Each structure stands twice: as C-alpha cells, then as structure tokens.
Length: 339
Image (cartoon, rainbow, N blue to C red; front, side):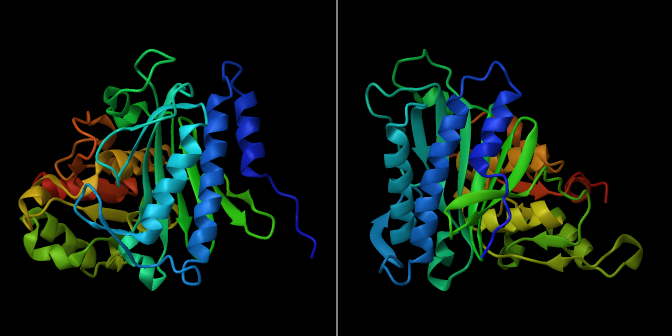
C-alpha cells in the first residue's frame, strides 16, 4: 500500500530549529529522545494485555497511590532513556519522591518533569491514557548536577511542554513559545507524522469535563456554574454536553481539539484536597502551557493564572480550570459573584 509522504516530527523539529539561528540543537535532541521513549511506551501499551503487564505492581508512589505495572514500565523507560541523553541536568517524576539525577558527566542545560502515565486507573479497562512532560532551562551553573530549584520554576518559564495520548491512535502534541502542533504515530513505519498543524482551540465550546461524583464536596459557586452549563438556553448554546474520561490528558486533548472546559476544583473530600488534586509540575503547568499557546486559558478556581504559580515543592497540588477561554471566563464570573 502506497502511503502519502508527510512531515515527520523529527523533520518538523529540525525545520523549526532553522528558523532560530541562535538555537544550539539541544532542545531538538531532547525532544527526539523523548519521542523514542514515547514510541517504546506506546508499543508496550498496545501489547499490555498480551504481555502480562496490566494490573498492580505491588508498590505505591509518593502520592500514596498504587503503582500500576505499566506505570512503572513507563517511568523506568523515560528515566533510563533520558539519564544519559546529555541534554538534562535533572528530572522529576510524579511517581518518585525526590529529584532524579542524571548520569555523572552527562549534565545538560534543561530539566524534565513528567507524569509517565496519566490516567493509570484506566489501564485495565482499555481507556485512553498518556504521558505528560515539561521542560525548563536550568538555573544552576552549567556542567554541575541539577538542583531542586532548577525544577521549581513557574510554568511561564517552560521552553516546551507536551503529551502523548495512547488511545485509538498514538498522538504527540507539543508546544513551544510560539506554536502547538500534533503528530500521529504510523505504527507500520514507527514514525510520528504531522497531522494537526498549528492547533488553535475554539474560544467557546459545548463540552464540560468534571467528576460530578464530587458535587457535594464543592464550593457553592462551582455547583451553580455546573447547573448553569446544564440549563437549557438555545440562545447561548446550552445545555453543554458532559464528557469525562477520567484521564486528564485525554480530557484536555479532546477539549484542545474540539473545544471544552476541564474542571478539577478544590473540594472538602479530604484535608489535602482543600488545596486541589492536580499536580502542578507534572500535569497542570505543562497542559496550561499547551492550552494557552493554542489560545485557551488555564487558572485555579480562585482565578490565579496557573503558569504564574511559583512551585514550592515537587509534588505541589492545585485546583485546575482549563480550556476554551470563553468558558473559563464564565466560570470565573460565577466564582467572583458576578453571576
């Protein structure tokens, strides 16, 4: 079967580098190494049921959650691939308590924060899951081991962020300071091809994504907003349609392409949830960077811009409202008492 020639992700990254004469090629190399790790994880995800890799590993992560076998595989794949790539000074993973050093003598000028397999509770039921990553330039001196302060930077300083969704197809989306593009993996040749150039998310949508099981634990304005989007009003395009997968990366990917709002506000379910549930470094900041570069918005439920939050610890959590700008603005009007 003849396949149309398309632009591979490697070709696209190299072409983008040529537009920046000051570029050293390190970011290009870093992204290419991450892409190899993504292909490895994708292959394992697609074979998970046959390879006896589904289910629990018997371990728990720093969050106190049971680690799935595929979680552990994805985490180790990224760590091993990136430890000697020469582009990083340090890493941090949602699955590990502390900073992850790179191999001695391989220290580079970037940092990497990653969620190796977001939505892992869906692994055993064959629902879309994904890998999320965030890249910053280091702050500490070049040539030395990275420090925790290199990783604790606001999302606004990200030089790139992205995710890989493992679903009906495997898709890579990444953003830099001036573009967001999507690439779909052709498994027959093992290449990601440009499938969604210059992604722009719709300003207004008809979709909302939220775990309504937490309804009775939310603040009253959040409940009023939810009733608002479900109320029939043809003039404003309501009611909205509920779409909630339970994998944040999958929900945000759909909303990025089709338009929508994803909400995980703080709640009173437990003392820790009073500060939010979504991890700032591994989920909220990179997805906020992507969505904002595509024309959307990302804030906390009290209106703080997620990209401007200064992280204080590696596993800090925040409430998240992210998606189409009109819908996020409307939500904040409810939170501010204007509706």
